[in-house]
Image (cartoon, rainbow, N blue to C red; front, side, top):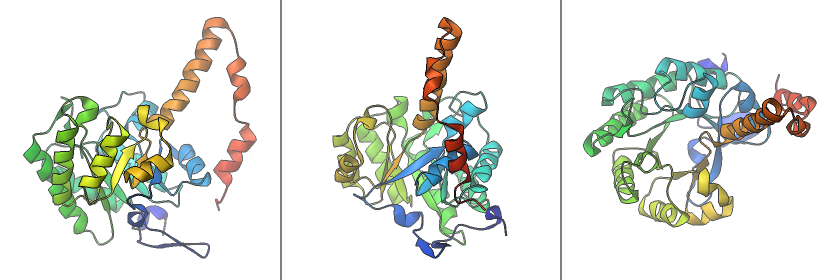
Length: 287
């Protein structure tokens, strides 16, 4: 069977070693890095550099299509993109599936089932409606997660559902409301909780202490000034990158191209990673 035809297993054998399941990686106070990739090459590089699990990034993938972030990628496109990533990696992969690609709870449930069919280890679903970019009413937000969690529990294999409260990041509500929603999402059956753009480490600590389910923290912006030990002390179980790593590459393109096309200077290219080193990372551990 091809990798795409195989459902994710709870324990996988790899050259004689037992690999920890995606769910078992989530331990409060011992966070792992969920490395967000945006194409097959970045997925392979991250795997061969030591990542334990990968995730797609809706924003980073949209950038590769020449589109802005925020509801511009369809469910079919996201599923095909995730399937491409699954086709090259041996790691568990989570799909960043925005708002589940629809407002109603059943659409979220169907998105879970479709994601599981292609072999994803889990997905995240946020509480923001597109294209209006507004937060769903509290009750509807909870019902959407309840339906998605019910679909996940009905699957024949393990599947980790992450529920996102995105209102802090979008400016629609504060940390108190985010925590209220996360607690309701946990009660509705979410396996992992995630509120992007928490304002500080003290708030991260508060959220982790108030919830039983593992908490994902987005390491971007001010949060990137903290290290793994700080997040462990705060009680986080998982650290994701969102589109931040992809935007590091966009910064390199921007800075190098500005110098070349503006001043005719090519010095930025002298810091390029050797092609042979990239080749080795892409070829490592491949059949």
